[in-house]
Length: 506
Image 1: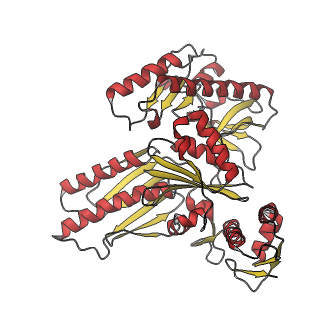
Image 2: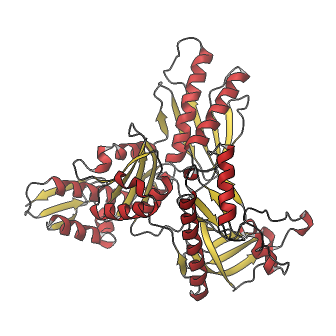
Image 3: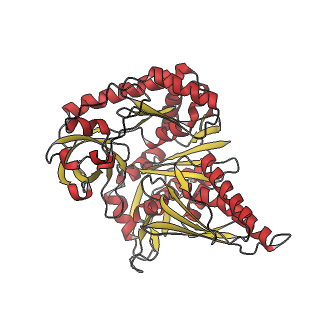
């Protein structure tokens, strides 16, 4: 059984998914001063078309133009723009005819500079790259992900029953409008047809409203955005495995309760409010687990360890036996360490949000049977516990496993840290924003536990933190003053380190 923990502060919202033993499985952040672009829809303007790399750059009102590759342009749009007709009369689930190689379209024949286009952000900007855009649109619901312009039906591999897969495919074939498709999520298994119909109707209505807004929108205007982090996390994770949804905000608890009541009323009893001490994330040891997830080395229960190094091109994971010696022979020791490491690697990839090309250097094993056992175990763990698609190659003779995992937004390190100015980026420190949030959380905890209800509080911090809070997060200070009915004076003190603070009560 799992829990969804939601910490809602004036400066950011955080969502943690934990197992029964409070082991952190996923962590999500949404700073209130930043906009999360992924899944948003915009009325973009084609800024330039580059036939040589089959890519168009689209101005959609952000600092950098997004890039739209021809592989992200749906076939119906391409055919319509090229005057080849369209496939909107295809039945749901019916495949587009595969084009012959000689018919490979040119992007310059599909898109023209200066024309408006509806685009969806599929990947956040990363490093020096702009956002990745698509016209193969998706709209996530509780049971399905609607593909409004791709008439194909996909089913989660975790639904293994042939009869159930057939039932679900039949329902969607009958219920989806012509020209639309969907991906059936794992939560859809054994769901009644009425619930599926409700989900489909809501998503279809949402899509039609997007088209209406696009027609009226100004260039570069945002047309649609998904649910906020808290509600999206509930929608995407709520199933029978979720034991409780716990938040430390009474206002958010009411919102989540109303949302759950509308999509899954049988789960409303799981929505709970946490009002005790210590804070919610401290109570479930989330803060320490986040800090450990920023470290390169991860210790295994057996005594072994894994070391995770990420570059812009790929992520490399090294597995070591450490002090684990096994009870029989060296091959037994190595196999047990590798099997345990495989489970931890799968967890760390989710937790750290690592995608792209990944190479895992397992400890060399002498027998092919053990290499096959490790491969099957690792593939099974990824299939059962990871929602993102991955492709794993078999263990090589050197103990290497090559795999790819779908990217989604920034990694945990990219979200919470900045490159270290002292070592030219070879290491990292927590960002000013993250340090500010942690110190604000400390201040909130101090106010919550203080017995002197009417005394003035002086909060001394490093000048960089003072600048961040006064210029960007000052509303958070005002919110704390209002919540606890206390006057808070912020003091800049250059004698303090960036992660230090001092609280005085007068």
